Image 1 (cartoon, helix red, strand yellow):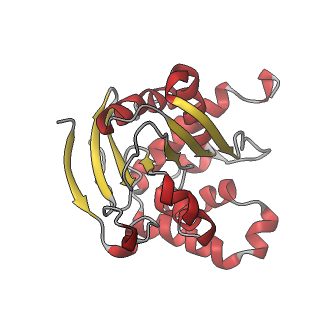
Image 2 (cartoon, one colour; image 1 turned 60 degrees about the vertical axis):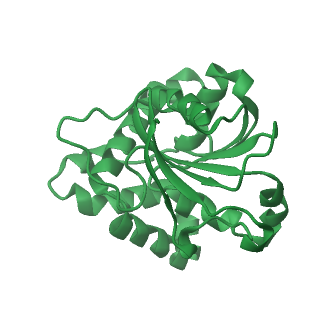
Image 3 (tube, helix red, strand yellow; image 1 turned 30 degrees about the vertical axis):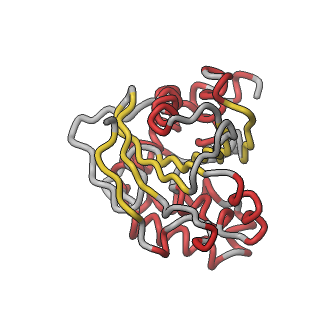
Length: 238
């Protein structure tokens, strides 16, 4: 009812719950929403009226690369003992995602926000604490504005990453855009200094994009984010 199946994740991909605490294994679901299917991973069991932590990643990432390092850290164990975590992957951004059919219209940033109430309804969740990074921060902010009764609080990281020279989208129109795409995303996720000082982290992130993500789907997500950035650019005073 509303999702096309559920499967248990392999141990290395599971969320950061200590299995001896009798948490159920992480579950992946593809949930049908107002604007199409969305991939969701639920870790732990929602407890009564307690809100669930809902995460949304940045472009060039999915929940694994954006949030697994945080939720696998020792400092987060106290939190994940008491709160279930619901990770949302933007359409087609999960690892090894199938390509969208020709002519597929990727949801706009606002439509991505409008998909989230369907996620809460599917799991029977009354409210969430949102944790969003970059593009995900905007999506969760819009979700909170649309559905204030569903949001207990927000943790927003890199809310407006529209920095000078953010990306040269002319590069996406050349024949070799699939090769240029990972480097353009790297320039968004990491500053120049960080790219020089954290070579290993940057390389790992780039390899994930090249090896695990669907480049066509990523390009669609980036394009809708870029249109949002154009509409909300410097001329609006931010």
